[in-house]
Image 1 (cartoon, rainbow, N blue to C red):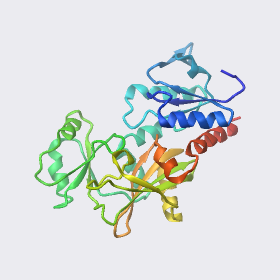
Image 2: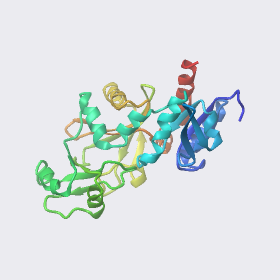
Image 3: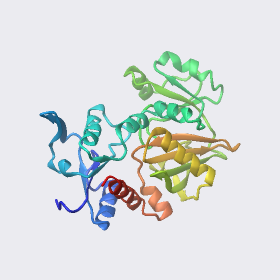
Amino acid sequence: MDSKRKQIGVITVRGPDYHPTRRLAEAARERGCDLEPINPYRVWPAYREGSAVLLGDRRAVYLDAVLPRQGAEIKDAALPLIAHMAQMGVAVINRLPAIERAKHKFFTLQALAGAALPVARTVFVSAAEGIEAALDEFGAPGAVLKPVSGRQGSGICRIYPGEVLPRHIRIELDNGRGVLVQQYIEPEGRQDLRALVIGGKVAGAMALAPAQGDFRANVHLGGQGRVLELSASLAETAIRAAAAVGLEIAGVDLMVAADGRVLVNEVNYAPGFKGLEAATGKDIAGAMIDYVLRVLGSNI
């Protein structure tokens, strides 16, 4: 490694060809930096004579900054590395407390509601026996069931009163993870928006349309994205949502119901941005690297 060039790491279980990592590496090179993917299961935090050190992949030892991007289904064994690197003086963007909050959907809602941001009616259910009681909150339209952790809309489904629980939801409950039971909002007349917040500013946004016959507006599930300039009030909501969760870089999903109500749906600490770059034509990867370099500059 060139000791004069800034060394940036991406904590990820994916390889260098995974779209976000590849794009971040391209943007780093364009700015005279090196970027390396660091597998959290190939680096081991340790203490040597009271000092925090790293064993395993030697590339992790030389980092100036790191972007944790393990994804929504990050396992607990990968978490200590994030805090350990921060203790070693590495600039970590985003930090562990915010990641732990963001990776659990109900903890995210608690942070948002605590900051007086609008969220959907939601019940957190810790056992199957609570599902019917939760559904009583929503009546005939039924509700949406969400695992507490997931990515790209996986595991989200709709349920009506009296229906048998889907197997994957029962597994979540049996394994002690709990699920969210959330109000169903009709896709017709609804706007689904995604904003990427970097350093307290909206770097880009797009509107999402669900695939035919689906209520989930996820690009990975066939949803379509188009460029969108957020209004000042929606941009402020997205920025406040990222701050409430404690994230410096965040994907914020907003929902505008047919009656105009605005809800913060989810906040993601490791947002994908392939669809956003395609829809907006913006260099989102470059904006992330620019922010990392600003953080490093302020730490000099």
